[in-house]
Length: 88
Image (cartoon, rainbow, N blue to C red; front, side, top):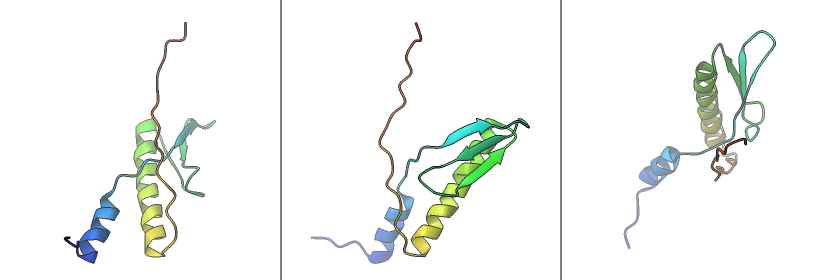
């Protein structure tokens, strides 16, 4: 049985891709506001959907890094797919 060194194991866990639901809404000024309900208080914004998405991704990565650093539990990743169907 081969054991993985602790640092390598920690790095592998750190690199795992996590998936969280994010809501994007355009406010009355036209700014896109992004929130991640699974990460309370994790909110960002951008002038475009793409900018808001990039910003919330960065905010989420920082949030998760802080949780790990402080030994706090990390919310589980979601396992879902979005299925598009015709409206008719």
